[in-house]
Length: 247
Image (cartoon, rainbow, N blue to C red; front, side, top):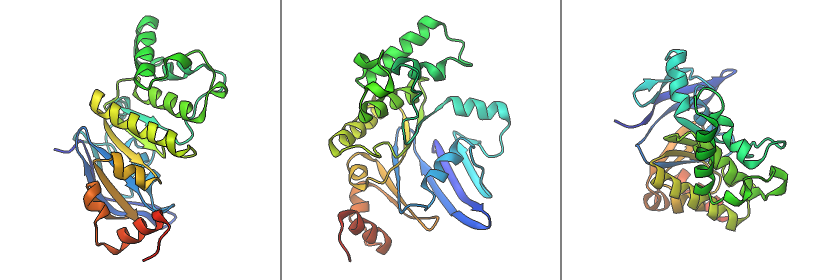
């Protein structure tokens, strides 16, 4: 059974269907990248996984649990398994990097200060940011801020991590570093990742599968090599647009 499953999900806002019968699965340990034009429902899809949004119809299932209809206790248990890397990093400016990373552990985990410090140190080491532990967000680069956000996303030892444009605003070299870290953490920690990205070239390099959304529908979901070789008109147009070409 897949770890994550969308079953014919429809989401309407004001009568407009942003998601229109979306179905796909994510296997345990997989990196699935969601790509597509702006406004096609990629971030809306992510929000359904932790019930920040609920479907108008259809089902969103995480490890056998329908998150749209489960009780609050079950939902809380699901949410504890999920880390979230926000587009802007979302670090609190008045806290050090280590304090930012520690935030998810300070409520409801029952961990001691020593255990929290150990978890934070482990997470910072995993993203190669140990030396920045005592610095404030304004004192580190955008790429380091993203890495700090990534450390915070995995510090609860989450087995699912959701990424919303993890390389947005970063230069190409730093983007490659972030993508390599996502891949590294996925394999080293057994994480299952769903990545919303505008960077198709990066997705082709590190995703296990790529899903193209257009008009609220799944156009293609396949391994990178098959995606790049697709003869689907929408996929070909999207690939050409990313390269600055026309077909």
